[in-house]
Image 1 (cartoon, rainbow, N blue to C red):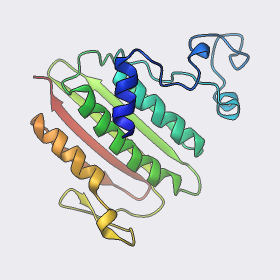
Image 2: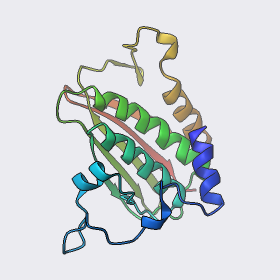
Image 3: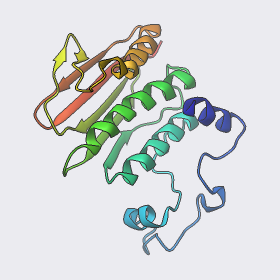
Length: 193
């Protein structure tokens, strides 16, 4: 799976970017202040790390999902602190974030305009808070912290959230889903011990 491929590359010290030779080099896409022009990057496919959390596995999945989102004209922003000492294994963290972001990208891509995803991961002294918010094109019905399926084949629905729930249960955590007319939110608080 994609998660295992990313983790395998990271453990071998390989880059997950298409061309490692462009990493950390100033390009014509940088303006004179060294600020990256995201529109030129999207149009010219210049690999750039948007997220640097001091955790290679988290950086890999977030940067990969960022590239998927921007390819669909979704604006994605991050608020992340030092995640070098996160309470989840790298496999669990990548799987959980991958599932949450797959859901967010799928939902935001259906919006006619204002396609946005906001990711916040904050490791505090006692707990780590993870929040993924995305715009939605239609109301989301949440029943007992589960989303009512809008897919034609409801058997294809909910595997990602079930995987997330299984992972969080291993760490004594749970998640909360919420939605209003324009935004959907996933949030979890994970104890650091």
